Image (cartoon, rainbow, N blue to C red; front, top):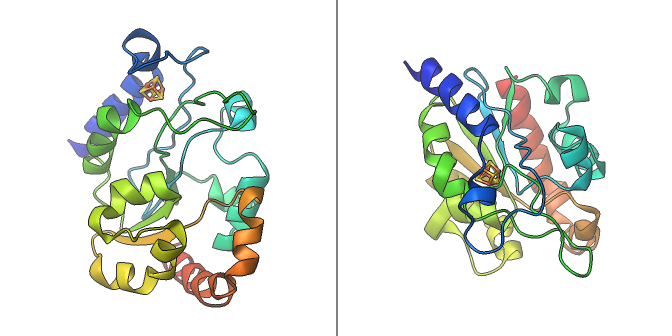
Length: 205
Ligand code: SF4
């Protein structure tokens, strides 16, 4: 039943045109190309933000320098990362949202999560670790456990972990080059959180 639900949802998402035909505000400036990897066996969910230009072109998630950094954080090769039996990859917005006047990526389309996320999560009950990458995913998956800033939220990872179960949640910053300075300013991230993350990933593969 759940597997049927997941297949049905995956087909519906592939055909989704909400942001073109019923947008909240400006329509998507291009044809939808949802990039999402649902899974009926993966225990780990990567809850990212939204595809960027490279991912929009490739049609596969994290085929960019952010993906290289994320795989390094997880301690996995591309082969493992792209094995849908091991990782589900479900961003907060499935389609590339376009760019602002300065060339920065727009936020995830706000139509997407209300339309699809709860159904997808219900159809993947085996997920027992959610990596909430960035504030959009943290808002959805952590709710009131979010702190005031991304730094405070990620710094509170031990408490978030202890309070969450079925699935556990770990907050992470986005692995974009834009956060290189943040990583340098917060050395506990690489010294404490990443070793814990790698061990939890190893345990589930
Ligand atoms: S971003 Fe989500 S809701 Fe919008 S068209 Fe793509 S799949 Fe549909």
